[in-house]
Structure formats: C-alpha cells, structure tokens
Length: 307
Image (cartoon, rainbow, N blue to C red; front, side):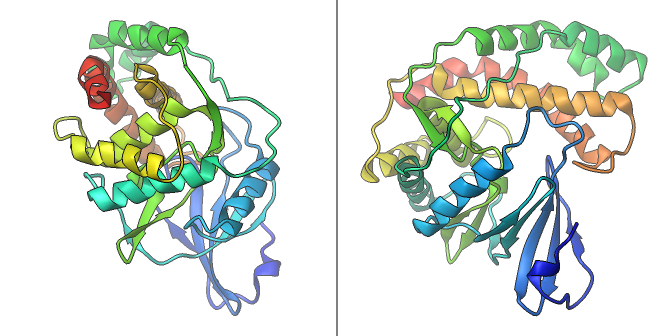
C-alpha cells in the first residue's frame, strides 16, 4: 500500500488486532497518527463501494458527527486520523450515552448524500445441514452444537427471507455496536463505516438499541437503555417506525450471514492473508452457533421492548 501522502513515518506501522472483517494498523508520521485499514477483498460477503462510503463519511464528518476524520480511500485501503478514546465494553452503556447515539443516528439519517443503489440484499442460505455435516467430518470444535441447531438455523433463514420491512429506507452507518464505538470524555465516537448503505429504519434502530442495551448474551437487557436510544432519535428529529419483528430481523440476518461466512473460513482451515485471523473466525463461528438460537427464541421478549 502506498501511504506516502501521510508524511514521513516515525516508526514501523503496527498491527491493531481485533477486527472482525478487515485488518487495521496504526501509522505515526510527521503529519500525525493514522488508522490504516487493509480491506479484505478476498472473500467479502458483498462488493464494497469504496467511493460511495468515503463520500458519505466525508459528509458526516463535515456535519459534525463525532467520528474519525476520513483522509483517503482506494480499492484496498482506508485511512482515517487516529482518534484516542476508551473502548466501549460489550455491556449495557449509560442511558446518556445511548441517548446521544440516538441523536447521532437522527443527524446521520438527515444528511443529503446521493446514494444510487438500494439496500444490499444478502442471499439467505439454507445449506445448514450440509455445513453441519462438513463440520462434523472435519472435526470442528463447535460441530456438535451446530448439528443440534440445524432446524433452528433453517427457521431463522425463513424468517429473514420473509419478514416484511415497513420502511422508510434510510442511508445509514448500519453497524453501530460497542466494538465500533469509542468513548471520549464519556461521549460517543462512531468508527468503522464500511457497511454504510441503505437500510430499513426499523432494522437500524433495533440493532443499535439492542446492542447498546445488553452484554455478550441476552440475559441482561436493560429496557431503559434500549428506550434511551429511541428517545434520542426522536429528540434529534427522527420519527420511529411501527413496532414489529423487523426491528430485529436485520440484526439476526446479519449475524446469520456473518456466522456462515466464518464457518466457511474455518472449514477451509487456512490462515488467510486478509480478514480476521483463523482463531477469531473460530470464535465468531462458535459465538454464532450458540448465540443465534438464543436470540431467535427471545424474539417475542425483544418485541416487548417496543411497547
């Protein structure tokens, strides 16, 4: 990657571990510190629209959305100014932090940015029996659990494929979770805009509010935090869509696709040169195999949060 436009390096570029899809590095130069993201183009689940996402990021930054400054983008690399802040743990955030996230989403949805394509519709795969058989044949550590939940995964696929989305469709970040946030003096900074695009509003709000209101599982969901995201959205000028399962189908469908993608990486058994390390793919596969059936079983409980 050519990074000469960032100035003279003060030392070697260092890997920052933990990315679920791409690989990130920190580069310190005489012009400042930069987050350099190497995009995984080898086995993406859908094409990455670099120019559109970068234009959207630039508009959000110019509008004062708290986020790292986008510096440059090409077909392989994204560069942002490095932002210091505290990592946000996967645990319920404060009501004030959740409220501000809701306000930020309302401001993002109000941006006037040209986006010519509609929502990305990832094909819903129904090959879970075959994946379970391959996992057992190759001795994957989570194979037995996957086999026991094949019927549930098929039911989840049917839900994702048939659930009605009420609209409106908005241009948005699409991936606001604790691991894509920082806290700077207690206030949010929104990272990782690569999945930006058009999305049904209920799916964006449900995914964001639930992610910020819970811990790693679903045993500790804070309704007050969930509602704070929605209250912040309304305070920021947004209008809430009608309640229903569509609020959570985007989250469960995205997790379903992410789990399948990591299962395929584990079945290949090769340490890829881009994207997450194989160990992280195993962790993601295991988390999905265990967590998705729990999430699916709790959908009626989650819908009650909207009342």
